[in-house]
Length: 341
Image (cartoon, rainbow, N blue to C red):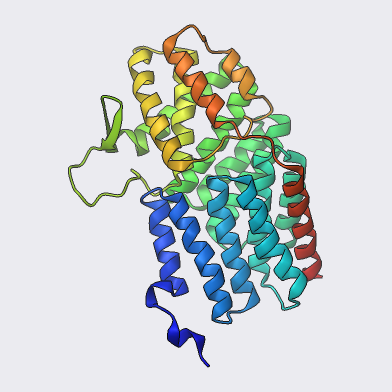
């Protein structure tokens, strides 16, 4: 019997993918995008899709899940949709799917503060499975820069890698903001006057170019500047966490550097930041080779605006990464690499 005959059209894999894309990239609905990929995983099983297709759905679910991280859900995903199927199925796996999964593992390890493990996994992936897709290649370059930068800081090598990453897909707004986020992260981690000035420059340039002209902030509420009724929730096609991180970096840059009219700007930016972090549900990993504690130490807790920013940072810091999840990620990575040999 052909199972596909009995499937509602809205549950077709391509339709689910389109719904997830719209939910995440236009409306910032991370949970809805994640839900679509979980359904897609089981639909792929139901329709007897190749094992690679099923793992690709698992990879997409991981991507959305890490943007609104719940360690229990992430642990369950790795165990139930990757480790168990790998143990029970010997079918071939497309190299591109393996590479995408390893890149997701690298991102998760980075979130968990395991920069050494992330760097090692990224290095293997780049050498053994060079990405064929431009966006994926740009992402690999950026992650390499991030891994090096968390150890050595924003060196010439790191900045060159980030420049190359941005140039690969220069028309991709999300990738541009990815690179800006990495630069800001590394400069924040330096904890120096020059570093904070660089953060202000990078964040201001990107915020003014991509975000500022498209939103209004009125009495603490953020809304589109256009009066059209069918506008997406996000001002640009970028992940909600990238928009939120850009606003956070600009908040810190304003608070530390105190340029002209910084108070008015910071008050608005904190509203913007709180809105997009609430929408994203994301968490922030440690900045570069420094810490958020050091960033907070550069602020004045007696100042009401600084205190509000400190409170926001405290809420956003990623909780400790469970060792069991890290072990599962390493096990899954080793299993995938072993299947390539």
